[in-house]
Image (cartoon, rainbow, N blue to C red):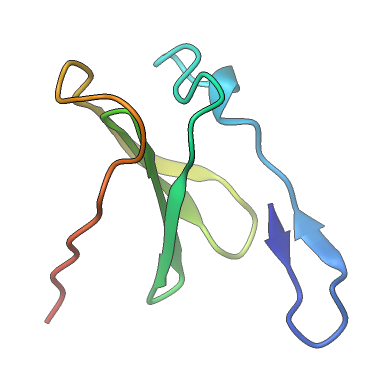
Length: 78
């Protein structure tokens, strides 16, 4: 979900389990970063990029089998 910082108003909400990766996080913690208008969310080897504007899925990577629990994010952008 994305909340407006000034008011806490819900801007959009997205259930990651809707996507073909299946149940991506199975109750585990989710790492989230906001990078230049893109929300990057990761958990248990699944990484999703969502539009900060409307929550639309931009891309996803399924690296399941790379561990369990929280997935750390290292993000590079120029």
